Image (tube, rainbow, N blue to C red; front, side, top):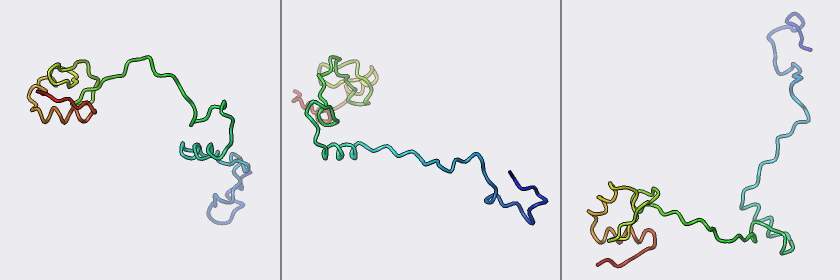
Length: 119
């Protein structure tokens, strides 16, 4: 019940008025743990080997083919240059690859750990 304007002498003080919409027993929910905290907590527990945890989950290799990305732009690579071995996204990038010198091509190949000696 709010006091009326006539009952209170002076300006309205909102901190003294009861607020029925607030629950006095409300507590903020706990924050989620990050992965580092979860892994540290799992190390301290002695669990059986058949109980899955973040550290012992194993899965079979994927049957989907790996996606290949353009060495120049990082977009999905649809094509591969047969002369240099560089992957490219479209014809515009292929024209750029044609202008590259051998050391530049070697640098692009080394960036994806596919160092090939070009003749």
